[in-house]
Every structure is written in C-alpha cells, then in structure tokens.
Image (cartoon, rainbow, N blue to C red; front, top):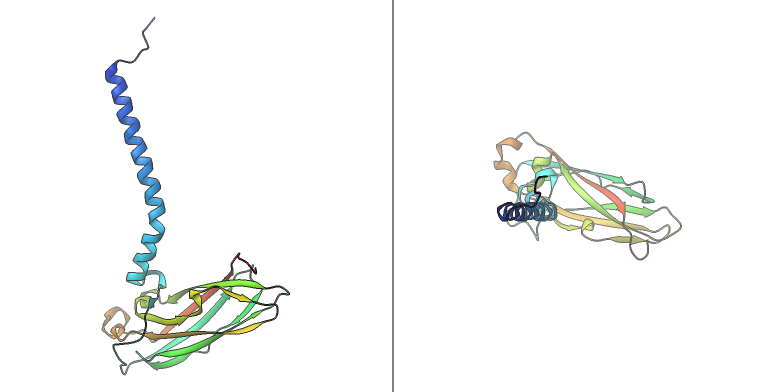
Length: 185
C-alpha cells in the first residue's frame, strides 16, 4: 500500500495556496463592496449615466446660447402618487431657473417616497447643476396631500466649449419616484 501522508514540503505548499486563495476571496469581497461608491463617485465626476452636479450657485455667468430643459416624471408601481412634471424652460445657458413638480398622494394612508434622477443626453450630466432639489430628501405625503417640489438648476456655460455637444439644444431632467420603507410608510 502507498503511504498517503504528505511530506512537509507538500503541507507548506498547501498552506501557501490556501492563504493565496483566502486573500483572493477577501480582495474580491472588498472590491464588490467598494464598487458601488466608487462607481457613484466616477459618475459624479464625469457626468456618466446622466449624473448631475451639485452647486451652490453659478459663478460663471450667462452666455447667449439658449438651451431648452424639459422635465419628466415616472412613478414606480409601489408608490400611489401622481407626479406632474414642470413645463419646459428655454433660457440662456447659465441662467438659474426654479421649476416645480407637483406630487399628490392618491392613497388613504401616509406614504414616504423619494426620487432618483438622470439627465439625457447623458453627456450633458456633467454640465447640469442642481442648487436645490427635492431628490435629496425623503418626502412623506399624507392621504390626499398635494405638495410642490421645487428644483433650482442651471446649465454650466462650459457646455459651449464641448465640441461633442455643439448641436445639443434640449436637455431632459427625468425623475423616477419610488416608495421608501420608513416610519409613516
């Protein structure tokens, strides 16, 4: 019969392999947890996927080129709200505008909701700056309650220097509203 006992050399190799495999697994788990915040940071910095910017005001001024901003709203099936988007706004690039969405709770109970947003064309996201937005907070609406939800924004004048966006004359800001599970929902 053959001796199945491992030599010390084989034991050390197996321990080293187990350690390497454990490190690979730990690295993959760490990368999975880091992927979402890193992707969000990347989108914020580049405007990828229509991610907008956050600003406190427009320090760059206004230019002569005009831009039309259109507004859209979608409500996820689990949220019993009706949301009416603002009317389109056409103004000079850099002008600070405030528009209002109207939300109504169509149910007979208090519901908390929140919105996620994107901008199309996606490449314009880096130039679309929001100063004030309801999407930054959860909103609880009582049964039948209607609220105004303002958005204050401007399009960065630097968009005029982006040769890939020379022909863009319209930007759409779209919100998708969804139910949030919290007290009052």
